[in-house]
Every structure is written in structure tokens, then in C-alpha cells.
Length: 173
Image 1 (tube, rainbow, N blue to C red):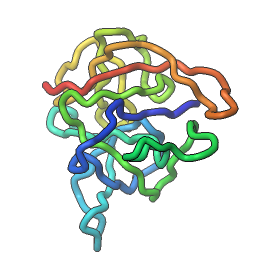
Image 2 (cartoon, rainbow, N blue to C red; image 1 turned 30 degrees about the vertical axis):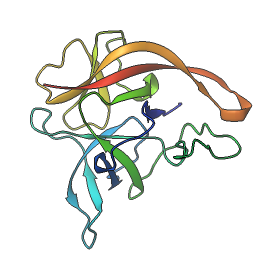
Image 3 (cartoon, one colour; image 1 turned 60 degrees about the vertical axis):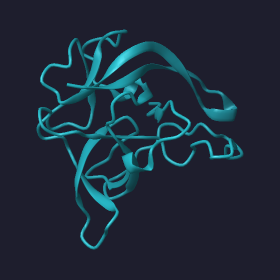
Image 4 (cartoon, rainbow, N blue to C red; image 1 turned 180 degrees about the vertical axis):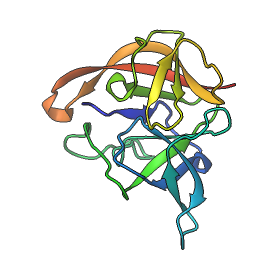
């Protein structure tokens, strides 16, 4: 599995980025809710699964530690790390859903009983960490609208090939 999710923006408003302790094993591209601070912390949230898609705005987990630096540099070596699982209790970076933020997400982290296609949506699911492909936003408070179906390189400097992905933009109900 590629487990890839990253924002297609050079800069992300720091007010949207949260540090979240995961409730179970997660991967980049999963979503969770972060409304309660961890005891004794003023900046780290306890993550939970989405309970009600009609009222909750989840956060999306992004790939960790290989973002481009402000001055444009990237880490040396294999800079495309994929397939990472973040186990229970780990801290991850997640971005609050904000209208018009755009992401590239590997399709292997999505629930795809409906094939991803331009114009379809990725919506949170009650009781799940996965986004699901759907024909409409339905009753979800937020989701992502698929703008392109493409591929993304995996394997960094060893170039292990490509995996299917979507380009999707946050939309609000």
C-alpha cells in the first residue's frame, strides 16, 4: 500500500494543522475528529473516529516529515516515504477541513466500492477512519470533490513505480 496524502499547497495556515494522538492504527489519508485536548496538554488532541458526518468536521492525516521546507529544500535521500502505518498512541499531523484546500490521496487508502472518478466525492463515514467514494456529498457536513484521477510515484530514489491517486478539493455542505 502506498498510504499517501499530501496537500497541494506550498503553505498551509498553521491554524489548520493539529497534532493528534491516534486511537488505532492509521495511515495518511485517513480522517479523524480532534475536539478534546490530551490531559495535561495545550496543543495535542485525542483523535476519535467520526461519529456523525452531519455535524462533525474531521481532520485529514497527512504524510509525516517529508514536506518541502520554507526555503524550498527537501530532505536528502529517499524523499518519498510510503506505506507507513501510525500505530495507536502515535502523534500525527492532521489538517482541519477548510474549504478549497486541495490534496493528492492514493486510492488504496479509500473505501472504493464506487470507482473514483472526476465529479465524485470523498466523504467521511460514521464509525470509520476511511474516506469513501460517493456520487454526492449526501448528508456529510464536509467532503472532497474529485477533480482528477491520476498516478503518483512511489519509492523515492529507488522509484518503485506508480500508484493510483486522486486530486480532490475540500467542499462544505
